[in-house]
Image 1 (cartoon, rainbow, N blue to C red):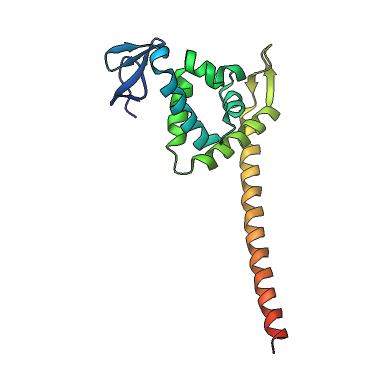
Image 2 (cartoon, one colour):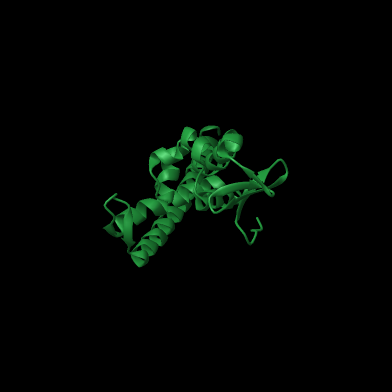
Length: 172
């Protein structure tokens, strides 16, 4: 989605761009409040988050975005919205050719990142991450996952062919 110079476009409302400008929402040039758009905002977040993270997206979104879980609850979103970066993330991730697969991959990377966290803030969130270690672990995990899927497919095909061979022997 093209971004304006004076804010961050997170979608549309009544056919005009819905833009964050200094934490205020604008539909075109008209200032709008969360009270006006909260319900539609939650619906849009729910649609995008469900596409990426599944129906139980609240905890996963909080974890990925390093937010308090309460921040990602529907009632809080309706009242306060979400940070711009979260809206942009959801829009881009939901537009991916395989959004649910991307969601699984994101949660995989998040899990690996937890294991590669070197220091934490007092809240428990990562403050320093071994990026090289995380990336190496993620690549190795993907390599092993692909190898496992390939092996299962090969074993399934061998089983299917073996079953066909033994059934042709018994029918003779």
